[in-house]
Image (cartoon, rainbow, N blue to C red; front, side):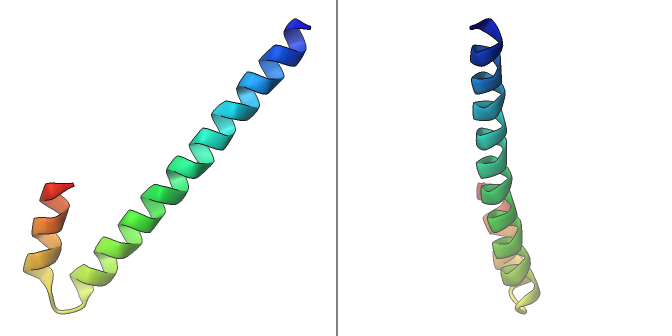
Amino acid sequence: MLICVKAIVEYEKQQALDSLTHILNKIILFTYMRGTGGANDRGKKFNQRV
């Protein structure tokens, strides 16, 4: 029983980590696209706000 619970907790942690990484990648990609689109000032302001 304890092993089962531990496995579920580990799985949940991994899922949370995956979604967090996914969100971070999206943010990084978005800011990178904005930053390289000749809008460096806007990109920097956006980074500071986040």
